[in-house]
Amino acid sequence: MPPSEPYEVSLHNVAAGYPRRPVLRQLTAAIPRSATTAVVGPNGSGKSTLLSVLAGVRPLTSGTIDRSRASRPCFVVQRSAVSDALPLTVRETVTMGRWAHRGAWRRLTARDRAVVHDSLDRLGILDLAERQLGELSGGQRQRALVAQGLAQEADLFLLDEPTTGLDLAARESISTVLGAAAAQGVTVVQATHDLEAARQSDHCLLLQGGRLVDEGKPGDVLTDSALRRIRDH
Image (cartoon, rainbow, N blue to C red; front, side, top):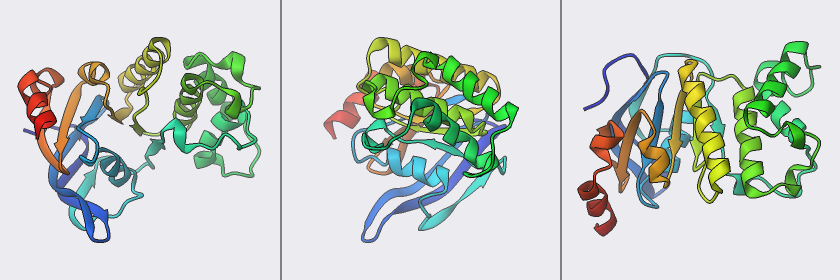
């Protein structure tokens, strides 16, 4: 059953995808507000499409979405989606998160600079601020992208596989920051294959074939039998 209010987003019979290739199929679910939600499922289950729908970058083919707040969501892409050739420092990358508030060309205020500094500090990458993004390790780059997301100060924080393939220190750093953001009122939704990270979330959506298999507390949803059925399907 969907969680009781307060919720951040509720989806009702949502379908979405690509021309002649549907991905999400009649999906009904609710995202609890000021909490962490993990979206789990095998490749092709619709996790990334669901994030795109929540971010407003993928239109629905049917169904409806209700949002409790009108602010623009923040969508943190996978680190592999960012080119090594971009001539950006880590600080410049994180500063781009303020564009949602200031625009790309307006001068930063003292508060903007403070938010960027705090975002770098929370992810433990202040010492990398003047390094080129393309010079970083995978874990460092992912932390820079999460810091960019934090700098947006959005109410809804969406992340696509933020900890996959990272070392333990990077995974723990990102997971700690996401938990702290939720405690401060941010709604965090991450698509993940990392079952350990998913089990640390407040809420979980389990997808298969673009449909919702189950949702609720991770301990109730991510059972051995449910995961075995998903894996063997």
